Amino acid sequence: MSPIVSQLTGIAKSTISKIENNQTSPSFETLQQITQGLNIHLPQLFERVEDKPKPYGRLDITRGDKQKLYSTQSYDYQQHSDQIANKKLSPRVLTIKARSTQELNGWIKDDGEGFLYVLQGSIILYSEFYEPITLHKGDSTYYDCNMGHNFLASGEDTARVLWVLS
Image 1: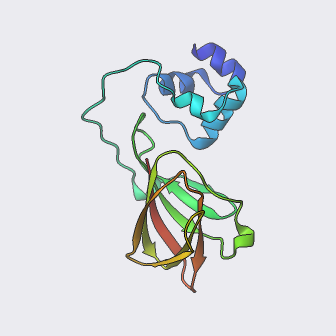
Image 2: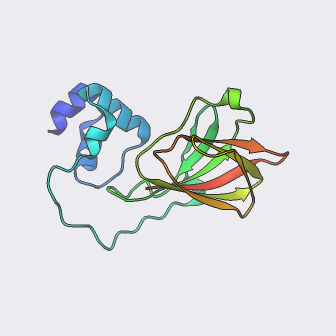
């Protein structure tokens, strides 16, 4: 299927092959390119086609000097463990840039659950069903990602968090 998908998406055949054979995990931008090229919605890429044996003995190391930096209007983040396909957790380290609700682009909503641990500074966690909560260095929260949520930096220091999504 690689040549057809490659033609439709503009992604190299070798990259498509590695993704199909679980040799690499695509970036979010690559996933967007695939869904646009195939004219499907992102969740369709993750639907089970058949039960497959569960992988075991997997290991991925993300070296500090090899992290790719992704940037949005509200956050800069590094994705960790990019080389493991079909993982259940998606760990990221975010530097939160947004300091006012006007800088946010609506709610973040995903399937699954989220864990957030404040590494540096303070943040304000906004959510659909709860009052805003201020979290300081060392504080953490675990929440349902189906509930709209978003984060702002608060205080003078840079706000950095470990954000793990399932």
